[in-house]
Length: 126
Image 1 (cartoon, helix red, strand yellow):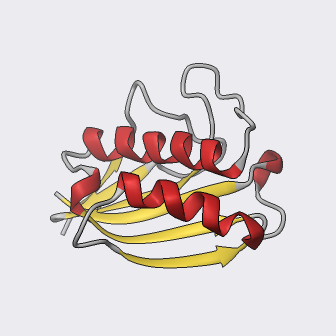
Image 2 (cartoon, rainbow, N blue to C red):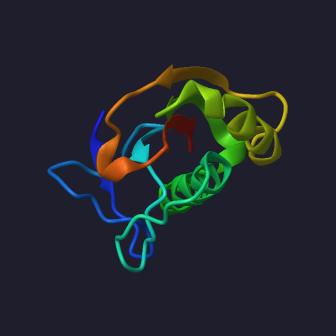
C-alpha cells in the first residue's frame, strides 16, 4: 500500500519534520493536534475544555482533508498535562464524539509543547 501525506491548506502547520496526517489505504493516522490557531500557528491557551475543543477542531480539519470525519474515528489518544482536567475534557469529548464511541486512551503527559494542556491524535477510516 502507498502512504500519502495529508497537509490541509486551512489546517495547523507542522512545527517539525512530520505530516499532519498519513493516509494509507482506507486508514488515516492524524498526528497530535493541540490548541493551535491554524491561521497564526500560535497557541490559544485556555482552560482544558477550551483547548480540547480547538484541538478537536484541528483534528476535524485534518480528517476532512483526508476524506474522513470525526464520526469515522476508530481510536483516540488524549494527552492531558494534568489529569485533574479529565472531567472538563471528558464532558466536551462526549459532545464531539458519538456512539459508538471510538476506543480511547487517556494519558497524563508532562511537558506538552508550548505549555498546552491538551493534545489529541486519532486513527480513522476513509
